Image (cartoon, rainbow, N blue to C red):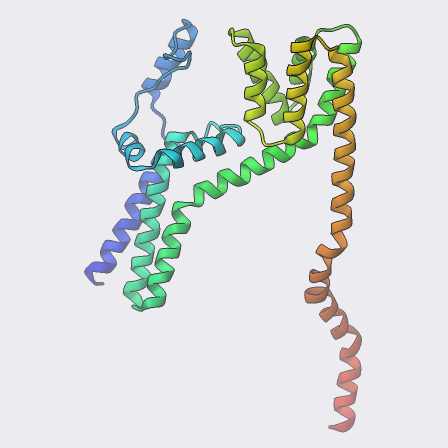
Length: 292
């Protein structure tokens, strides 16, 4: 094999090895220090634990545009900030995958040089580099859809609790404890923000900013206005729950109306040809035998 082939193989093996190490390795000393600080009530400057930043991640942060880091951080917030994919790990994985894609493109180009292979190599490099973005975006979309689906039932639970005589935050706590989806996680996080001393209005607005669901944003605005002007929270919950149920039913009806159009192309491309073969195949064989 030529030197370019060996170089391409090396550029594929080393980045993938680093990728595996990044995904499955943990800094045990830093994790133990963070756990000890949390148990003692010691955190970072913003009340959060601060772990030492590796040199590689620091270099990647400096080389990546600030606006792109902010956009990626926003996607992670919409995805619920999964523990397996923190921002620093994603920033470290992206150039590694891009380098592996470039090496794969170079390997293909060495086997068959040409302009098409150059374009294919650029496409593979871009695909590998933006693959974490696609995965995070997909996770964020599914999470927001789950929040949108769970909101009417959660509002009904909170309404029942408030009408039974509980306070609004106690009703939120019950809904968060009894729920298991992403909306329950957001409610629990909002209550934790309030417990550590954050103003209620800021905590509610932060919950709305971490979501793209319009119904949740509308609910937060209604709660903030009710808290500001002294409106009864049970009335707000009843109105918001009714509107959420109506919108969920409308979305279900819209999906049902789109279903015939979505099934038209699979019917034409896959089901109708098979039916024609089964129904007309024997007749075509008999005709060929007759005139053969």
